[in-house]
Length: 293
Image 1 (tube, helix red, strand yellow):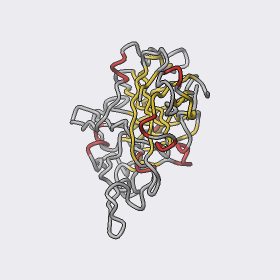
Image 2 (cartoon, rainbow, N blue to C red):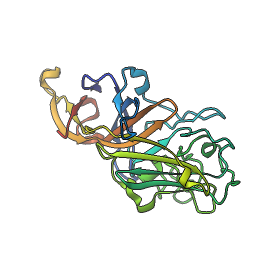
Image 3 (tube, rainbow, N blue to C red):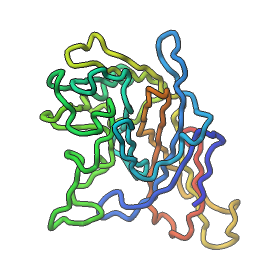
Image 4 (cartoon, rainbow, N blue to C red):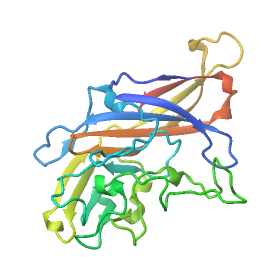
């Protein structure tokens, strides 16, 4: 299928296909990605998300990128559907002088706490490398509670019986016994990222919250996009002007990754639809429209 984007060079997109629920027909999904700069803060200490002129920052990531001691890591953009909104903070707001031991933090959206990171004391070491590298990083697919292991008699290698769209969410979540302990108090991230909202990120060492480093940004005021799906009807000229509109799908803004050290960020939107709405050979174009359609 052809993907037609608005004339906005900070955007990129890709299509994916596969099952989103056991027993359903395969779905197609559109993944839209936008790259943003975070220029100097205004008088209130808030950075605005400005579309980046370099489209390379918006390139779709098709496979997980492993982190290194000095790298942040990154998870593939190709999830078909997410149950919650992911927000990741790559690296640190202020490089910890004593490493990542005992490092804590919080992330609020529109004055509501979405994510927290807590440790038992100042000497508690993170349980895995991602938490060493990043304040709020990416939960590996191979670690509980995200890991899914097919087990007989439900050993479907594609979608285990207990699979849900929540598996595709990459934000950190751990059991209380782990260090650090990541939580989503109030489950506020079941909603999409709200437009024009203040995002307040804070970081401190255990026991010193009054000395927290902070980084504040505001989400774009326009976050609505719609995918308009076009197909050939199966008879008559197979020309673009004759392709009919099958349906429109609102895109959900479900992922934000912030890179404080580089003062940049990326946003992702996605939607999915039943691939059998028309014969597979008849699909032609996905038009990404600004607004709610």
